[in-house]
Length: 366
Ligand code: A2P
Image (cartoon, rainbow, N blue to C red):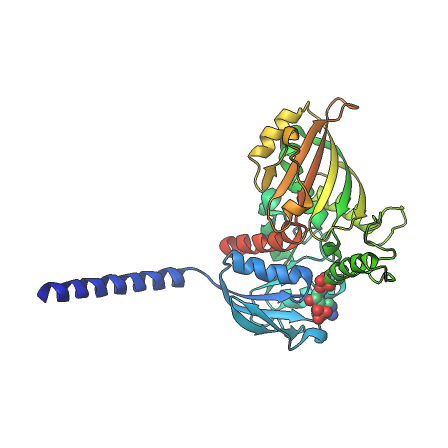
């Protein structure tokens, strides 16, 4: 009896001690009021999932979208959250806002959020080339996050640029990249939820001999390829192609790199693929690239010709790594390499990258 009582007392004390310890840990870990702007969209939805999966220290969460979605219910960590219309006062009391609600919405609301003391991580192209706004891929230039204080905004790069610089930055650091020639094969999810629905509807219509409707793209995307992403510019390139040029130089902090791009929309739901040719200043070999990328952060080399193993969108979808394969010498030039690079455009190309930035911001700067 006495022994039982003693055991119970010891057990109670151990539990009390453990509870107190958990309390201390919880109190010492900072937590943040987080808003997701564009929560009902393809990227916004994934941002919510990434915050959950990565156990971001959320004190409170707010989901914002247009008036069309106000009142709709989404969930966070198993609890329902009502979507609110984004207004000028939405960001009062918030610490961090993850934006993916289109360029014009970001132009209008990101400064409003920043003005109320809420740091914005913006997925649109609105602020990327502003010299007072850091453009960040954590594996490449996380130090740039420190510059968030200038405008209270950090820009998330274009999806095609992110996966390209994750793969190329270790090569640039060691061999010095002189020129990049890239052609992309981009999934429809990069255009947003409406484009996912359009590809699905067109495939079904064609398989059932029904008339096909094009609403999102100027031409049919099902069983087709469109060498046209974003608007055409005066120089004959698309805006997407020029984003890859300018953003790559800003992130790699080297304006001398020559970049030329052809961006193509393909009938794939998730994950962008890129055929990349690089010319380097120093002599380079495929073996050296394989070695270097074998230990590069955020990269997985998938390159075994004997077993027909190379990166493919169906394997990259749902993952956070950037997959690199088909590493080979460009036999037409002395110091040149060809690579095939694939990553999930909604995850590493958008939501995961934004949440990784938020993690560094939260841990180091806030
Ligand atoms: P909504 O669903 O209410 O239109 P996607 O890129 O997948 O199309 O998603 C775009 C996201 O941006 C959606 O969440 C959308 O909300 C939101 N959005 C679009 N326009 C606005 C706006 N003017 N104000 C707030 N959110 C907007």
